[in-house]
Amino acid sequence: MRSSERRASERFPVVIDVVVIVDGSERHAAELRDVGSDGVGLVLTTDKICLEDGASATIEFDASSGIGSPLSGHFRVKPAPVSYRPNTRSAGFCIDPICRSSLEAIMHQCSAASLAPSEEIGFLRAWNMLNVTERAMLKDSLEKIGTISADAAKIVGNLMIDPNCSAIRLLHFMKVFLRVLRANSGVPAFHVLEEAFDVYRIEHSLEDTHKDRLIKYELGSSRLASV
Amino acid sequence: MSLDPLASRAFRLKVVKGWVSHASPRLSPEDLINDAFEGIDGSLNNFRAAVAARPEKPFLGPSERDLVWCCPSEDFQKVGNTGLELLRALGTSWRDEDVVELSYPISVVEAVYKPCAIVAGANPSFRHTPVEEEFGRTIGGLREMIHLPLSVVDALVDGASLREWVGK
Image (cartoon, rainbow over all chains, first blue to last red; front, side, top):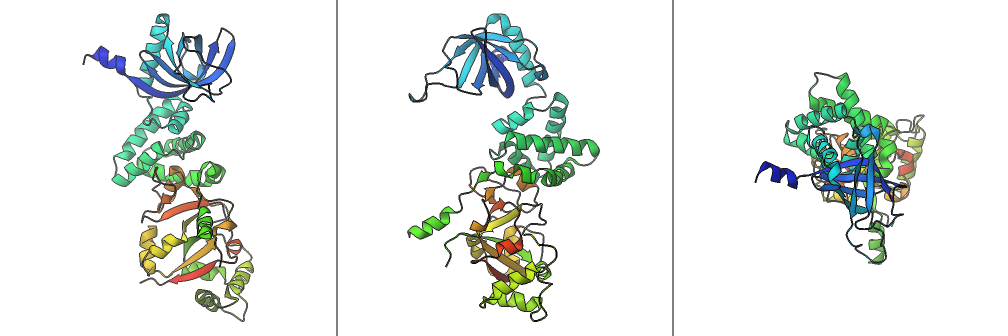
């Protein structure tokens, strides 16, 4: 496969907050979920509009994303999977040729060191809320920890793939981890991780509890009662 | 008999003795604990009264600011018979100690949760949270769950019990 063909097939999972402008005036909050050479994937925050296949729109980026140029193009919308919920929130977005260089710049930004080490949506959302320096520090440390031992690799893997970790909880933890990391330069990365867990437990564990998955353990009594 | 599912936690014997160190002169801490182990009528109430007499309320977690880690009681029953086997199953670093199991109806807590990877990582004994399972897992393979802080007194309701796990 030639490098240009390989490049053409690449898609990078991301979460970037954007505003979608439809019909030149309607503004809707959305998330960019992936970026590829032929366009981007979008998920609208609400289902208050009905996306139409082929409709033109513009995507604007927040200044904090570091992406300056808006993207213009048109939606590629699949038919709604169920008739009782016709408004689909997710769509593909084909980029106009005039925006090709902007898309290339976004792909370059997504494919370099700032590419998230996980594709789990909560992790990606938290990652999106870090700046470039924080991402590089975190990625480097997590990679180092993952090579220390099987147990360390398991702990890091759990952090990246656990769907029970909401983005805001992960963000709390990432910020704590980075704070401890900065205050302990030269300390082995796994010790930093353990210290970060301790600080997180004190500062956030109770506040974050209600985002954990509820266990329906009480069903045990109803099962017994029905015997 | 209560149909409530029970949650269990393991404590060092010396910790449980500390809970009842303000026992009345009529019953020593050892008497209170042994009576509760044997399930003598009224023993749980006596034990509870002694815990309530402490000036500082003990909690099931390390403090009143900590989440409580516990297991479904039926998982404890599947472990062998000695405290050593229980400690291995839990994955604690304690060794050769007498252990007390406090089991309490899960209805005394608002809800139990599967801890996320971050919360589990903060406890060296409970670091594995399999994505595909409803519960987390201890290092030793027991199902585990967490709930909000709960005092020992509040856990000692009807249906609660104490069980002795001898170290060796």
